[in-house]
Amino acid sequence: MKDIAISRRYAKALLLIGKEDGNAEVYREELSSLAGFLASETELSTIIANPVYALEGRRGVLKVVVGKMNFSPVITSFALLLFDKGRFSHLASIDETYQWLVDELNGIAHAYVVSAVELSEDAVAKIKASLSALTGKNVLLNLEKDPGLIGGIVTKIGDLVLDGSVRTQLQNMKESFKRGESV
Image (cartoon, rainbow, N blue to C red; front, side):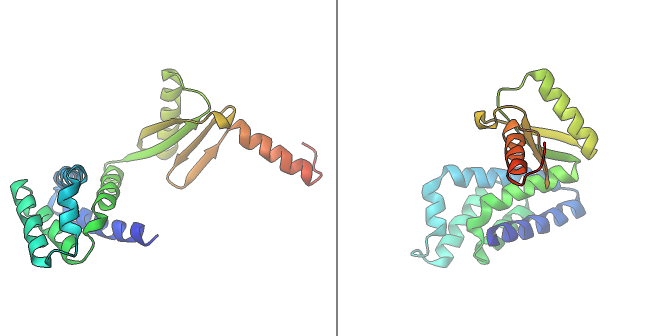
């Protein structure tokens, strides 16, 4: 839980700067680029994070890496701030949170749809249209299959969960029978 709070705090701070100077999308690309690069270069990430090496040496390595990538002064300062505050290990999570916040700023919502079977393109389009009407935002769908649902779909968008799965309906019926209610 603490990791989420840290990631959200730093991502929100960067978003405020991006909204103020109109460069939220630029920062999105640069932050994503830095996080992706360091995720792919595990040895470099390990060196930057390893306290066995001198603090100034590790900071210098990070400064050179960020400098070579020609980032804006804001992202350069942001990366060094994360390092100085001991939060650099949260970079991937901060990046993920920032991506979501910028999407939110742009009127885009993310929805997760889990279905028992693969959905047709027509069904996906109808679900997307319904969720867009419900939220008033453009919706990006993340589709998953879970045969354990038996049938139907479960949709999660933000804090809202719409569970239309057969498994849940059967479970609810079972609970009703246990309580002696008629279905």
